[in-house]
Length: 360
Image 1 (cartoon, rainbow, N blue to C red):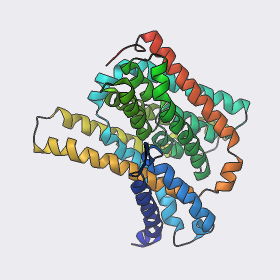
Image 2: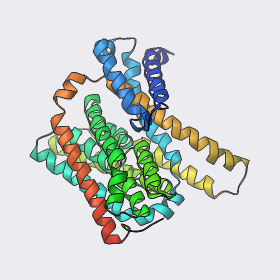
Image 3: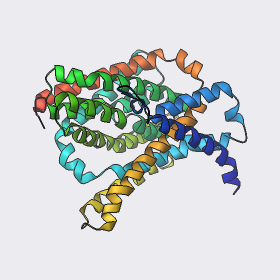
Image 4: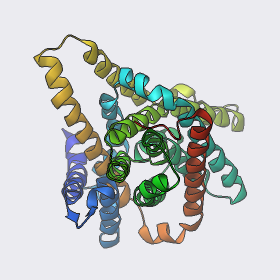
């Protein structure tokens, strides 16, 4: 009961702001939908503004516990729940063809992030988060990686902000760009699924492309490719946990720090959730399977997004926006380089494998 009293106020504040951010995403101004920005970004900005207005909120006994809980635990819950939206059999059928593109784009982004971290001397955790966010699935990948590398809230906020900037640019530019360079409709779907990060931005990009190409199917294929990329969270987080353990051991031979102590257990639950969805899909049709696929999975998708928005709000509350802007030059440059490299690699590998000109 004491724990609930300590955390409830901060959780409630985060939930209210996440709710407002989610409602704002329903607004459309002309041809522009606020959903393109996404509830997590709106929530993190609101959180930063709250920090400006009430700078001592994170030190308050009333709110501090709940804000910390939301930024850490609820962020992990969001990743777990995200697993219910992954049907591994569907991904195996549709995503397998795009696997070489996915592996290549993930690899190039991580390599570019690592090299530039050394060259421009950017904070290693921020570089890691931007590299992972650019290569896998934006905010979800950052949410999964942050606790493994012990990134603080300002590093997470910086990375999320950079990923958001290039997500929006991709959603606005890629549909016309892809059509202009002669990408086939399936080629564009793979391009959108590998070179755009957040699901909402992939959806916006692919939907616009369907109008430009005058065909349907781009959206469903792009989202499936994007979900296939999401699975890269598993090996990446495990590898980062191993690297962190090795570094800790080498720097202090007497350290009790162990791989087990930072093992991302929530990733196992993420995998379990996706396995459940996959198993239900092969069960005989029934009222249960219809409810699960039509209602439960939809609710879980919404809840995952809402929890991420809550966590981003809490992270925003812990972030000094003035400091964030002052230190934003290098992260933005790194984000641009990762974005450009992923874009180029996606098109190159498609051209090599023959997907480039393929139509749905």
